[in-house]
Amino acid sequence: MLQVGNEAPDFETEDDAGKKFRLRDYRGQKLVLYFYPKDFTPGCTAEACSIRDGYQFFEGSGIPIFGISGGSAESHQNFREKYALPFNILMDEDLKIAKSYDAYSKLDILGIGVKRITYLIDEDGKIEAIFGGSEGLDKVKSRKHAEQIINYWGLKL
Image (cartoon, rainbow, N blue to C red; front, top):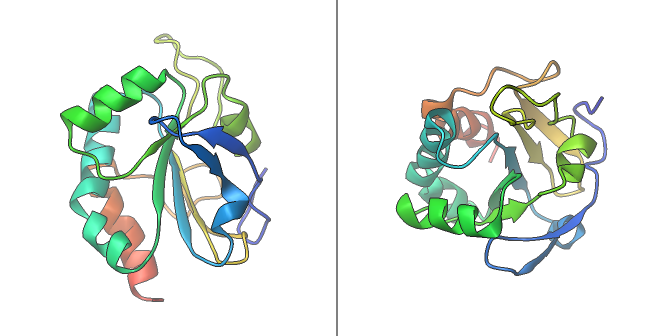
């Protein structure tokens, strides 16, 4: 189980636009990695829109933010387009990344196996804070998730 202070598991994938993503390429800067169950569901939409609405803080602070979920690139692209999301969504169709981040649980009735959990990763690639999960600071509040992150980092930046 991942905890604050652990090295964030490195991974490679593509984003919804087909661009290669490697976590190690972000060493030297803070990063937000948020796992969410499924595009277009009410809670996931509220969470994504909260982050969109707080995006100016992340951009202004030089903190990249990435959503990550199972599902297809097409679904992620449609989700981003419909809600004007200014950040990319990373691909995890086989849920290997979710599993390595303790963000996977047994599939539920809707066939969703990704938990709502967010990792704040520091400049050294270590987990600085977790929202959600048993080790988290607080449960992810979908409609106020950007505010949760900003309140944490806003005091430390």
